[in-house]
Image 1 (cartoon, rainbow, N blue to C red):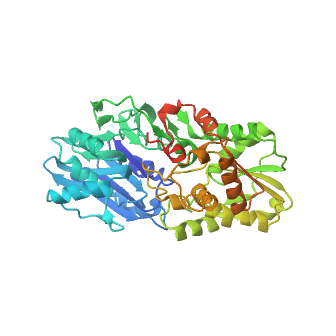
Image 2: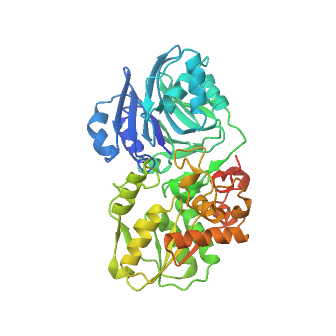
Image 3: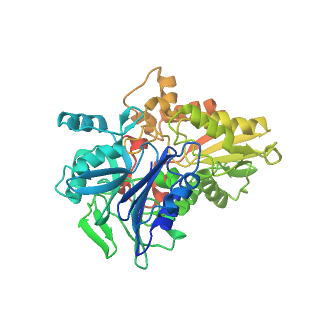
Length: 464
Protein backbone atom coordinates (compact mmCIF):
# COMPACT_ATOMS: atom_id res chain seq x y z
CA UNK A 1 0.00 0.00 0.00
CA UNK A 2 1.09 3.56 -0.67
CA UNK A 3 0.17 6.76 1.16
CA UNK A 4 -0.92 9.99 -0.55
CA UNK A 5 -1.33 13.50 0.82
CA UNK A 6 -2.38 16.84 -0.63
CA UNK A 7 -2.85 20.41 0.60
CA UNK A 8 -4.31 23.66 -0.74
CA UNK A 9 -3.11 26.61 1.32
CA UNK A 10 -3.73 30.35 1.49
CA UNK A 11 0.04 30.76 1.70
CA UNK A 12 2.96 28.45 0.93
CA UNK A 13 1.96 24.79 1.23
CA UNK A 14 5.43 23.29 1.48
CA UNK A 15 5.72 22.76 5.26
CA UNK A 16 2.31 21.04 5.52
CA UNK A 17 3.04 19.01 2.39
CA UNK A 18 6.45 17.88 3.64
CA UNK A 19 5.32 16.77 7.09
CA UNK A 20 1.93 15.47 5.95
CA UNK A 21 3.56 13.22 3.37
CA UNK A 22 6.20 12.06 5.85
CA UNK A 23 3.43 10.79 8.16
CA UNK A 24 2.80 8.07 5.54
CA UNK A 25 6.31 6.60 5.73
CA UNK A 26 5.03 3.38 7.32
CA UNK A 27 3.09 2.57 4.13
CA UNK A 28 5.79 2.49 1.45
CA UNK A 29 9.44 1.57 1.16
CA UNK A 30 10.41 2.12 -2.48
CA UNK A 31 9.96 5.69 -3.74
CA UNK A 32 8.63 9.02 -2.55
CA UNK A 33 7.76 12.21 -4.36
CA UNK A 34 6.36 15.73 -4.07
CA UNK A 35 4.73 18.00 -6.65
CA UNK A 36 3.88 21.67 -6.08
CA UNK A 37 1.92 24.08 -8.26
CA UNK A 38 3.31 27.61 -8.06
CA UNK A 39 4.32 29.58 -11.13
CA UNK A 40 4.64 26.16 -12.75
CA UNK A 41 4.53 22.49 -11.76
CA UNK A 42 7.59 21.38 -9.80
CA UNK A 43 8.40 17.77 -8.95
CA UNK A 44 10.92 15.83 -6.90
CA UNK A 45 11.22 12.04 -6.68
CA UNK A 46 13.72 10.03 -4.62
CA UNK A 47 14.46 6.37 -4.06
CA UNK A 48 13.90 5.83 -0.32
CA UNK A 49 15.07 2.22 -0.09
CA UNK A 50 17.48 2.20 2.82
CA UNK A 51 16.78 5.82 3.76
CA UNK A 52 14.05 7.99 5.24
CA UNK A 53 11.74 10.47 3.54
CA UNK A 54 12.79 13.41 5.72
CA UNK A 55 16.48 12.97 4.96
CA UNK A 56 15.91 12.70 1.21
CA UNK A 57 13.55 15.66 0.86
CA UNK A 58 14.66 18.07 3.60
CA UNK A 59 16.67 20.29 1.28
CA UNK A 60 14.34 19.88 -1.72
CA UNK A 61 11.01 20.86 -0.25
CA UNK A 62 12.08 24.30 0.93
CA UNK A 63 12.64 25.38 -2.66
CA UNK A 64 9.30 24.04 -3.89
CA UNK A 65 7.19 27.17 -3.53
CA UNK A 66 3.46 27.22 -4.26
CA UNK A 67 0.14 27.10 -2.44
CA UNK A 68 -0.99 23.70 -3.73
CA UNK A 69 0.87 20.40 -3.57
CA UNK A 70 0.59 16.61 -3.49
CA UNK A 71 2.94 13.96 -2.09
CA UNK A 72 3.30 10.20 -2.00
CA UNK A 73 5.17 7.46 -0.17
CA UNK A 74 5.07 4.64 -2.70
CA UNK A 75 5.22 0.88 -2.24
CA UNK A 76 5.97 0.29 -5.93
CA UNK A 77 6.07 3.09 -8.50
CA UNK A 78 8.09 6.22 -9.01
CA UNK A 79 5.60 9.04 -8.43
CA UNK A 80 4.27 11.74 -8.96
CA UNK A 81 3.85 11.63 -12.74
CA UNK A 82 3.59 14.96 -14.59
CA UNK A 83 1.61 15.04 -17.84
CA UNK A 84 1.08 17.89 -20.31
CA UNK A 85 -2.00 17.11 -22.37
CA UNK A 86 -5.17 18.46 -23.94
CA UNK A 87 -6.43 18.83 -20.34
CA UNK A 88 -3.45 21.03 -19.52
CA UNK A 89 -0.46 20.16 -17.31
CA UNK A 90 -1.13 18.16 -14.16
CA UNK A 91 0.62 15.97 -11.58
CA UNK A 92 -0.86 12.74 -10.29
CA UNK A 93 -0.24 10.30 -7.40
CA UNK A 94 -2.03 7.00 -6.82
CA UNK A 95 -2.60 4.36 -4.17
CA UNK A 96 -3.75 0.83 -4.95
CA UNK A 97 -3.07 -2.11 -7.22
CA UNK A 98 -4.28 -2.51 -10.82
CA UNK A 99 -4.74 -6.23 -11.37
CA UNK A 100 -5.37 -5.86 -15.12
CA UNK A 101 -2.55 -3.36 -15.76
CA UNK A 102 -0.92 -5.43 -18.52
CA UNK A 103 -4.21 -5.74 -20.40
CA UNK A 104 -4.90 -2.00 -20.14
CA UNK A 105 -1.36 -1.15 -21.24
CA UNK A 106 -1.67 -3.42 -24.29
CA UNK A 107 -4.90 -1.67 -25.26
CA UNK A 108 -3.11 1.69 -25.12
CA UNK A 109 -0.17 0.32 -27.11
CA UNK A 110 -2.61 -0.67 -29.87
CA UNK A 111 -3.94 2.89 -29.85
CA UNK A 112 -0.41 4.15 -30.48
CA UNK A 113 0.26 5.32 -26.92
CA UNK A 114 3.64 4.86 -25.27
CA UNK A 115 5.01 4.86 -21.71
CA UNK A 116 8.15 6.51 -20.43
CA UNK A 117 8.19 5.17 -16.86
CA UNK A 118 9.05 1.54 -16.13
CA UNK A 119 9.02 -0.12 -12.68
CA UNK A 120 10.82 -3.48 -12.41
CA UNK A 121 10.21 -4.09 -16.12
CA UNK A 122 6.51 -3.31 -15.83
CA UNK A 123 4.45 -0.29 -16.81
CA UNK A 124 4.29 2.28 -14.03
CA UNK A 125 0.73 2.11 -12.59
CA UNK A 126 0.57 5.86 -12.01
CA UNK A 127 1.57 6.69 -15.58
CA UNK A 128 -0.99 4.15 -16.83
CA UNK A 129 -3.67 5.91 -14.79
CA UNK A 130 -2.55 9.30 -16.09
CA UNK A 131 -2.80 8.12 -19.70
CA UNK A 132 -6.37 6.92 -19.11
CA UNK A 133 -7.32 10.16 -17.35
CA UNK A 134 -6.30 12.26 -20.38
CA UNK A 135 -8.62 10.22 -22.59
CA UNK A 136 -11.56 11.88 -20.82
CA UNK A 137 -13.17 15.17 -21.84
CA UNK A 138 -12.11 16.63 -18.50
CA UNK A 139 -10.35 15.48 -15.32
CA UNK A 140 -13.52 14.25 -13.63
CA UNK A 141 -14.63 12.18 -16.61
CA UNK A 142 -11.09 10.91 -17.03
CA UNK A 143 -11.14 9.67 -13.44
CA UNK A 144 -14.47 8.00 -14.12
CA UNK A 145 -12.81 6.10 -16.99
CA UNK A 146 -10.27 4.78 -14.49
CA UNK A 147 -13.05 3.48 -12.26
CA UNK A 148 -14.80 1.89 -15.24
CA UNK A 149 -11.75 0.13 -16.65
CA UNK A 150 -9.52 -1.07 -13.83
CA UNK A 151 -9.73 -4.31 -11.89
CA UNK A 152 -8.32 -3.86 -8.42
CA UNK A 153 -8.25 -0.51 -6.66
CA UNK A 154 -7.01 3.01 -7.32
CA UNK A 155 -7.43 6.11 -5.18
CA UNK A 156 -5.70 9.20 -6.54
CA UNK A 157 -4.89 12.90 -6.33
CA UNK A 158 -4.58 15.12 -9.41
CA UNK A 159 -2.96 18.55 -9.08
CA UNK A 160 -3.52 21.25 -11.71
CA UNK A 161 -4.32 24.97 -11.94
CA UNK A 162 -7.87 24.30 -10.65
CA UNK A 163 -6.72 22.76 -7.38
CA UNK A 164 -6.48 19.15 -6.20
CA UNK A 165 -8.90 16.52 -7.48
CA UNK A 166 -9.26 13.72 -4.94
CA UNK A 167 -10.94 10.43 -5.84
CA UNK A 168 -11.44 7.31 -3.76
CA UNK A 169 -11.54 3.95 -5.54
CA UNK A 170 -15.00 2.73 -6.51
CA UNK A 171 -15.06 -0.17 -4.03
CA UNK A 172 -13.73 1.96 -1.19
CA UNK A 173 -10.85 -0.45 -0.54
CA UNK A 174 -8.45 2.37 0.38
CA UNK A 175 -9.42 5.46 2.41
CA UNK A 176 -9.21 9.16 1.63
CA UNK A 177 -10.02 11.77 4.28
CA UNK A 178 -10.63 15.50 3.84
CA UNK A 179 -9.49 17.96 6.52
CA UNK A 180 -9.54 21.70 7.10
CA UNK A 181 -7.47 24.18 9.09
CA UNK A 182 -8.99 27.66 8.87
CA UNK A 183 -8.73 28.47 5.14
CA UNK A 184 -6.44 25.53 4.27
CA UNK A 185 -7.70 22.20 2.91
CA UNK A 186 -5.98 18.83 3.07
CA UNK A 187 -6.58 15.30 1.82
CA UNK A 188 -4.83 12.22 3.18
CA UNK A 189 -4.73 8.44 3.22
CA UNK A 190 -3.92 8.45 6.94
CA UNK A 191 -5.98 10.83 9.09
CA UNK A 192 -3.14 10.70 11.64
CA UNK A 193 -1.24 13.06 9.31
CA UNK A 194 -3.73 15.83 10.20
CA UNK A 195 -3.39 15.76 13.98
CA UNK A 196 -0.11 17.61 14.56
CA UNK A 197 -0.71 19.87 11.57
CA UNK A 198 -3.92 21.18 13.14
CA UNK A 199 -6.39 19.94 10.50
CA UNK A 200 -9.85 18.77 11.57
CA UNK A 201 -11.59 15.97 9.69
CA UNK A 202 -14.38 17.35 7.50
CA UNK A 203 -15.43 14.19 5.66
CA UNK A 204 -14.41 10.66 4.71
CA UNK A 205 -14.67 10.33 0.94
CA UNK A 206 -17.23 7.83 -0.27
CA UNK A 207 -16.27 5.05 -2.71
CA UNK A 208 -16.11 6.44 -6.24
CA UNK A 209 -16.50 10.02 -5.02
CA UNK A 210 -14.55 12.80 -6.76
CA UNK A 211 -14.01 16.18 -5.10
CA UNK A 212 -12.00 19.28 -5.96
CA UNK A 213 -10.09 21.16 -3.26
CA UNK A 214 -9.51 24.84 -4.00
CA UNK A 215 -8.65 27.97 -2.03
CA UNK A 216 -12.35 28.70 -2.15
CA UNK A 217 -13.33 25.42 -0.52
CA UNK A 218 -14.52 21.91 -1.31
CA UNK A 219 -16.51 21.11 -4.45
CA UNK A 220 -18.17 17.76 -5.16
CA UNK A 221 -17.49 16.77 -8.77
CA UNK A 222 -19.03 13.31 -8.62
CA UNK A 223 -21.15 11.80 -5.86
CA UNK A 224 -20.02 8.65 -4.14
CA UNK A 225 -21.46 5.16 -4.46
CA UNK A 226 -23.36 3.22 -1.83
CA UNK A 227 -20.94 0.32 -2.16
CA UNK A 228 -18.25 0.31 0.52
CA UNK A 229 -15.74 -2.51 0.93
CA UNK A 230 -12.91 -0.95 2.91
CA UNK A 231 -9.85 -3.13 3.56
CA UNK A 232 -10.14 -4.82 6.98
CA UNK A 233 -6.37 -5.21 7.15
CA UNK A 234 -6.05 -1.44 7.57
CA UNK A 235 -7.22 -1.79 11.16
CA UNK A 236 -5.55 -5.13 11.87
CA UNK A 237 -2.09 -4.27 10.54
CA UNK A 238 -1.47 -1.69 7.83
CA UNK A 239 -2.79 1.52 9.34
CA UNK A 240 -1.16 3.91 11.79
CA UNK A 241 -2.53 3.61 15.38
CA UNK A 242 -3.74 7.24 15.54
CA UNK A 243 -5.65 7.05 12.24
CA UNK A 244 -9.39 6.75 11.72
CA UNK A 245 -11.12 5.05 8.81
CA UNK A 246 -14.91 5.30 8.51
CA UNK A 247 -14.66 7.19 11.82
CA UNK A 248 -13.24 4.11 13.60
CA UNK A 249 -9.83 4.37 15.31
CA UNK A 250 -7.09 1.83 14.50
CA UNK A 251 -5.62 1.47 18.01
CA UNK A 252 -9.05 0.90 19.57
CA UNK A 253 -9.82 -1.86 17.05
CA UNK A 254 -6.53 -3.60 17.78
CA UNK A 255 -7.21 -3.52 21.50
CA UNK A 256 -10.64 -5.05 20.87
CA UNK A 257 -9.03 -7.74 18.69
CA UNK A 258 -6.71 -8.67 21.53
CA UNK A 259 -9.60 -8.74 23.99
CA UNK A 260 -11.55 -11.08 21.68
CA UNK A 261 -8.59 -13.46 21.56
CA UNK A 262 -8.30 -13.45 25.36
CA UNK A 263 -12.03 -14.04 25.81
CA UNK A 264 -11.75 -17.38 23.97
CA UNK A 265 -8.49 -18.43 25.66
CA UNK A 266 -7.62 -20.05 29.00
CA UNK A 267 -3.87 -20.38 28.71
CA UNK A 268 -1.69 -19.99 31.81
CA UNK A 269 1.20 -17.63 31.19
CA UNK A 270 3.63 -15.25 32.90
CA UNK A 271 3.29 -12.38 30.45
CA UNK A 272 1.62 -11.06 27.33
CA UNK A 273 3.75 -9.42 24.64
CA UNK A 274 3.18 -7.99 21.18
CA UNK A 275 5.48 -8.02 18.20
CA UNK A 276 6.29 -4.33 17.65
CA UNK A 277 4.75 -2.20 16.42
CA UNK A 278 1.32 -3.34 15.22
CA UNK A 279 1.19 -6.37 17.52
CA UNK A 280 1.58 -4.19 20.60
CA UNK A 281 -2.00 -2.91 20.70
CA UNK A 282 -3.38 -6.43 20.21
CA UNK A 283 -1.29 -7.49 23.21
CA UNK A 284 -2.59 -4.56 25.26
CA UNK A 285 -6.16 -5.67 24.61
CA UNK A 286 -5.32 -9.28 25.45
CA UNK A 287 -3.62 -8.22 28.68
CA UNK A 288 -6.48 -5.99 29.79
CA UNK A 289 -9.04 -8.75 29.20
CA UNK A 290 -7.01 -11.67 30.61
CA UNK A 291 -5.33 -9.92 33.53
CA UNK A 292 -1.94 -11.35 32.48
CA UNK A 293 0.72 -8.61 32.77
CA UNK A 294 2.03 -6.93 29.63
CA UNK A 295 5.82 -6.97 29.15
CA UNK A 296 8.37 -6.36 26.38
CA UNK A 297 10.68 -9.35 25.76
CA UNK A 298 11.44 -7.95 22.28
CA UNK A 299 11.93 -4.27 21.49
CA UNK A 300 12.15 -2.53 18.14
CA UNK A 301 15.47 -0.75 17.71
CA UNK A 302 14.33 2.25 15.67
CA UNK A 303 11.41 3.34 13.49
CA UNK A 304 14.00 3.75 10.72
CA UNK A 305 13.65 0.05 9.91
CA UNK A 306 11.00 -0.68 7.26
CA UNK A 307 8.12 -3.06 7.79
CA UNK A 308 9.07 -6.59 6.80
CA UNK A 309 5.64 -7.05 5.18
CA UNK A 310 6.07 -4.41 2.48
CA UNK A 311 9.55 -4.77 0.86
CA UNK A 312 9.26 -6.76 -2.39
CA UNK A 313 12.22 -9.14 -1.97
CA UNK A 314 12.41 -11.99 0.53
CA UNK A 315 16.06 -11.16 1.16
CA UNK A 316 15.18 -7.59 2.22
CA UNK A 317 12.25 -8.78 4.35
CA UNK A 318 14.50 -11.27 6.16
CA UNK A 319 17.18 -8.67 6.84
CA UNK A 320 14.66 -6.22 8.30
CA UNK A 321 13.06 -8.92 10.45
CA UNK A 322 16.46 -10.02 11.76
CA UNK A 323 17.80 -6.58 12.59
CA UNK A 324 14.85 -4.57 13.87
CA UNK A 325 13.82 -6.68 16.91
CA UNK A 326 16.24 -6.98 19.82
CA UNK A 327 15.58 -9.55 22.58
CA UNK A 328 15.83 -8.79 26.31
CA UNK A 329 17.12 -12.05 27.89
CA UNK A 330 16.37 -10.93 31.46
CA UNK A 331 12.67 -10.69 30.59
CA UNK A 332 12.53 -13.85 28.44
CA UNK A 333 14.41 -16.54 30.39
CA UNK A 334 12.20 -19.23 31.90
CA UNK A 335 8.92 -17.44 31.06
CA UNK A 336 5.66 -18.62 29.52
CA UNK A 337 4.84 -15.96 26.95
CA UNK A 338 1.60 -15.21 25.12
CA UNK A 339 2.82 -13.50 21.97
CA UNK A 340 0.27 -11.46 20.02
CA UNK A 341 0.73 -10.45 16.41
CA UNK A 342 -1.48 -8.92 13.77
CA UNK A 343 -1.18 -11.75 11.24
CA UNK A 344 0.92 -14.57 9.84
CA UNK A 345 1.58 -13.78 6.20
CA UNK A 346 4.58 -15.81 5.05
CA UNK A 347 5.66 -16.93 8.51
CA UNK A 348 9.37 -16.90 7.73
CA UNK A 349 10.24 -13.89 9.88
CA UNK A 350 8.08 -15.07 12.77
CA UNK A 351 9.75 -18.47 12.69
CA UNK A 352 13.37 -17.50 12.06
CA UNK A 353 13.71 -14.13 13.73
CA UNK A 354 11.10 -13.94 16.49
CA UNK A 355 10.37 -17.39 17.89
CA UNK A 356 13.97 -18.45 17.38
CA UNK A 357 15.21 -15.41 19.34
CA UNK A 358 12.84 -16.20 22.20
CA UNK A 359 13.94 -19.85 22.26
CA UNK A 360 17.62 -18.92 22.15
CA UNK A 361 17.18 -16.73 25.22
CA UNK A 362 15.34 -19.30 27.30
CA UNK A 363 11.61 -18.84 26.75
CA UNK A 364 9.83 -21.74 28.42
CA UNK A 365 6.62 -21.60 26.34
CA UNK A 366 5.54 -19.47 23.37
CA UNK A 367 1.81 -19.20 22.75
CA UNK A 368 1.03 -17.35 19.51
CA UNK A 369 -2.25 -15.43 19.33
CA UNK A 370 -2.99 -13.93 15.92
CA UNK A 371 -5.44 -11.04 15.54
CA UNK A 372 -6.97 -12.16 12.23
CA UNK A 373 -7.85 -15.50 10.60
CA UNK A 374 -5.35 -17.39 8.40
CA UNK A 375 -4.57 -15.48 5.19
CA UNK A 376 -5.67 -17.71 2.30
CA UNK A 377 -5.57 -15.54 -0.82
CA UNK A 378 -3.06 -13.00 -2.22
CA UNK A 379 -4.45 -9.46 -2.18
CA UNK A 380 -5.92 -8.23 -5.48
CA UNK A 381 -6.23 -4.63 -4.32
CA UNK A 382 -2.90 -3.61 -2.82
CA UNK A 383 0.75 -4.28 -3.49
CA UNK A 384 1.57 -6.90 -0.84
CA UNK A 385 1.40 -10.68 -1.30
CA UNK A 386 1.27 -11.71 -4.94
CA UNK A 387 1.36 -15.53 -4.85
CA UNK A 388 -0.46 -18.29 -2.97
CA UNK A 389 2.92 -19.99 -2.45
CA UNK A 390 4.01 -17.11 -0.20
CA UNK A 391 1.22 -17.66 2.33
CA UNK A 392 1.86 -19.80 5.41
CA UNK A 393 -1.66 -21.25 5.37
CA UNK A 394 -1.34 -22.34 1.73
CA UNK A 395 2.02 -23.96 2.47
CA UNK A 396 0.34 -25.91 5.25
CA UNK A 397 -2.53 -27.01 3.02
CA UNK A 398 -0.15 -28.15 0.28
CA UNK A 399 1.86 -30.14 2.83
CA UNK A 400 -1.30 -31.79 4.18
CA UNK A 401 -2.90 -32.47 0.78
CA UNK A 402 0.27 -33.21 -1.15
CA UNK A 403 -0.70 -30.58 -3.74
CA UNK A 404 -2.33 -27.19 -4.23
CA UNK A 405 -6.12 -27.43 -4.10
CA UNK A 406 -8.73 -25.02 -5.45
CA UNK A 407 -11.61 -25.61 -3.02
CA UNK A 408 -10.48 -24.27 0.36
CA UNK A 409 -13.86 -24.24 2.11
CA UNK A 410 -12.92 -27.04 4.51
CA UNK A 411 -9.79 -25.15 5.58
CA UNK A 412 -11.60 -21.81 5.88
CA UNK A 413 -14.25 -23.33 8.15
CA UNK A 414 -13.00 -22.64 11.69
CA UNK A 415 -14.92 -25.64 13.07
CA UNK A 416 -13.63 -28.27 10.62
CA UNK A 417 -11.03 -30.92 11.33
CA UNK A 418 -9.09 -29.70 8.28
CA UNK A 419 -8.82 -26.21 9.76
CA UNK A 420 -7.51 -27.64 13.03
CA UNK A 421 -4.93 -29.75 11.17
CA UNK A 422 -3.79 -26.70 9.20
CA UNK A 423 -3.34 -24.60 12.34
CA UNK A 424 -1.49 -27.45 14.06
CA UNK A 425 0.87 -27.79 11.06
CA UNK A 426 1.62 -24.06 11.06
CA UNK A 427 2.21 -24.10 14.82
CA UNK A 428 4.73 -26.95 14.57
CA UNK A 429 6.43 -25.39 11.55
CA UNK A 430 6.89 -22.11 13.41
CA UNK A 431 8.09 -23.82 16.59
CA UNK A 432 5.31 -22.41 18.79
CA UNK A 433 3.93 -24.15 21.88
CA UNK A 434 0.37 -23.34 20.81
CA UNK A 435 -1.25 -21.23 18.07
CA UNK A 436 -4.71 -19.67 17.96
CA UNK A 437 -6.05 -17.46 15.18
CA UNK A 438 -8.82 -14.91 15.58
CA UNK A 439 -12.27 -16.00 14.45
CA UNK A 440 -13.54 -14.02 11.46
CA UNK A 441 -16.71 -13.03 13.31
CA UNK A 442 -14.66 -11.67 16.24
CA UNK A 443 -12.43 -9.65 13.93
CA UNK A 444 -15.48 -8.10 12.26
CA UNK A 445 -17.01 -7.35 15.67
CA UNK A 446 -13.76 -5.68 16.79
CA UNK A 447 -13.73 -3.44 13.71
CA UNK A 448 -17.34 -2.43 14.29
CA UNK A 449 -18.62 -2.25 10.70
CA UNK A 450 -21.16 -4.61 9.11
CA UNK A 451 -19.59 -7.55 7.29
CA UNK A 452 -20.97 -6.33 3.96
CA UNK A 453 -19.01 -3.05 4.30
CA UNK A 454 -15.62 -4.76 4.61
CA UNK A 455 -13.25 -6.35 2.12
CA UNK A 456 -12.49 -9.82 3.51
CA UNK A 457 -11.06 -11.25 0.30
CA UNK A 458 -7.69 -12.41 1.69
CA UNK A 459 -9.49 -14.61 4.25
CA UNK A 460 -12.56 -15.78 2.33
CA UNK A 461 -11.66 -15.46 -1.36
CA UNK A 462 -14.97 -13.69 -1.99
CA UNK A 463 -14.53 -10.71 -4.31
CA UNK A 464 -16.05 -7.56 -2.77
